[in-house]
Length: 168
Image 1 (spheres, rainbow, N blue to C red):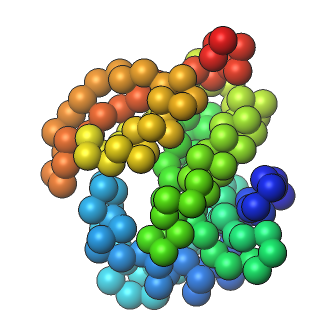
Image 2 (cartoon, rainbow, N blue to C red):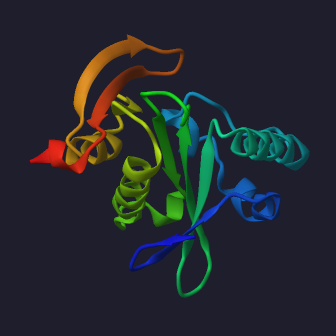
Image 3 (cartoon, one colour):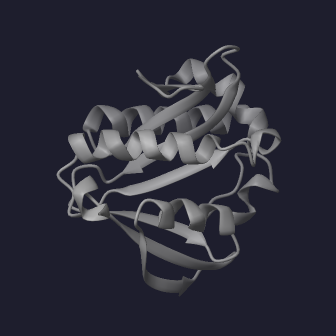
């Protein structure tokens, strides 16, 4: 388990699904490449695929919980861990937006990934209109690699340096 001053960051378990599923709304996913699961059973199936990817060493999903209350705050994932360009993905439940949790979590996972991944750089795709996520990538030294039209939005892909000494 990882921790920040406000968050416990734990590896995703299937037992987390009941806390996560109600927080995945259409308004939350407007800046995501995916849509909410149509049922809890479908979400559990997605959760099983995450666990399988974790056991294969390709992806890692972390659950963010408030340290004092254990309230579910959000999810952060690292995809394609075994490559030279792992990809970050992050979301925070809507009623906890604008409280600094995303910045806190991403910095902690970034620090973990620098130590645990053989990355040349990290990829962080965001919707062009998602200014909060763009600020997160730029705060870690991310620069725009490319821009691409996706089904729901224009996606900006950032490359984030893989070594903290690259940030100086």
